[in-house]
Image (tube, rainbow, N blue to C red; front, side, top):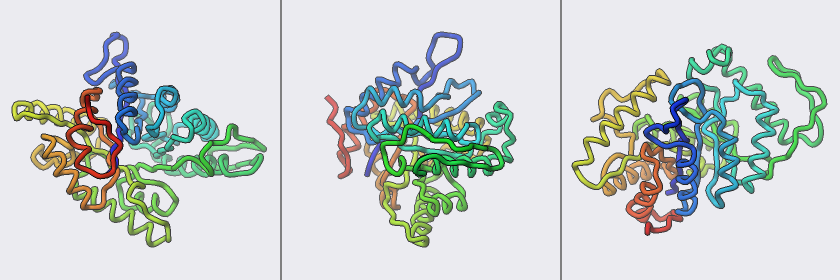
Length: 330
């Protein structure tokens, strides 16, 4: 089993304070420690207009992290393509791949938050159409020898050359955030790796992994369990006195995510088996269940997000699994 991270920095606008997670400086220290401890990857969110201080310029921050780290892979989760000029995205992503020495994972999506589409004055009903055309252009930009032209419904380019070329050939790994059966099948058919969300139950996750694997087999695509990244909230504690506080934090986080996404959430905290919430032994047991269901690549969203929490997980959980590069906490 492989372990990575999911999330990003948070700040509060206009106060000079940081949120209950941490600001940019703390987040950079956090990722540098993850790199030292051997965590495999970071997938960084991109969101806009939330009032939650979430990262809006993910590739800019990842480029800085590329210079401060050596081994950890750096990914987007995700660049919402309907909001961006696809040629500029292709250039920025290729530049990041170069700066990171080929450690970039390009996660993309079509978006789901109505408030963000409203903020950019783009009808959410156009999301799929805009996403499809943008990906066609980006793939063309990275694989065409020499100049190319494109004349689509939204974008028109004549005789352009996208520079630089990405270091990873033919292009960085492509990841698609998906949850519905149709979108999961599409990811498998079209050569994407799969990013699964942090609110889905263990049963849902195992079913989605199986569906992705089955669709890969149907289209003749070699399947590797590392092609699926499963996001899980991490809240590890060591005493029963800490359990109530961890559950309260989980309720708050689920409430914020659900309100922003306007999506479904667990009916009750008792039914919520998605997070890695508990003692190290409880977390290991939950990870074993996921592993038995075909999950091998865990991306952890940690509300504490401190170097200490990274060291604790590396010391108390990672050694229970064969595939890890963790350094024991000092």
